[in-house]
Image 1 (spheres, rainbow, N blue to C red):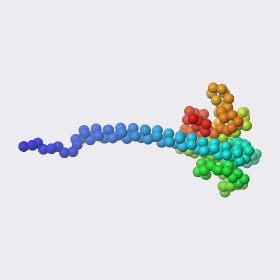
Image 2 (cartoon, rainbow, N blue to C red; image 1 turned 90 degrees about the vertical axis):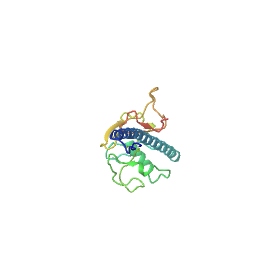
Image 3 (cartoon, rainbow, N blue to C red; image 1 turned 30 degrees about the vertical axis):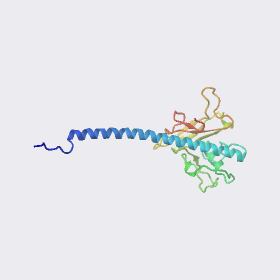
Image 4 (cartoon, rainbow, N blue to C red; image 1 turned 120 degrees about the horizontal axis):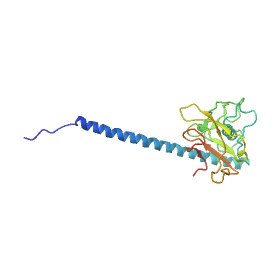
Length: 205
């Protein structure tokens, strides 16, 4: 007489299977998070390069790069001035070139103008932001050497943004300014902090 066949799993076998599934899930989450982070970094770099092309087109149309300083009396504070000035230049009713996507606009310091300054109906003094919702720092080469660094309001996601000082970047080897005679675009990167290793620029390789 044949012995009866065993059906199903023992408790020990089920526990082993659950442990293996848990380990695979944890590994997937780690890899998935890394891939997602790399994807956002790639997307941000692409945005910076798109913006750089638009700035070059602005120069061709207008005879010079957009100013990184706001007109006197326009802002209620000195925060995010470079990014706000870039927004004002692009969205001026007089400028007919390609514009940044409106989905890129953020207002991390919450300021407004007394009257509408752009072709948009809002009085918000917008900044052009990166994929993490922080303002992109913009420096025009004529003002690289200004003694006071600009103040930007930025920070990690799910945290209140904070004031940070940002200056035009220098080459570590020559100590000369990056992109001489042109402009610099700087994203604070995923951590929302300027001056850290994950910062991105449009001239990154």
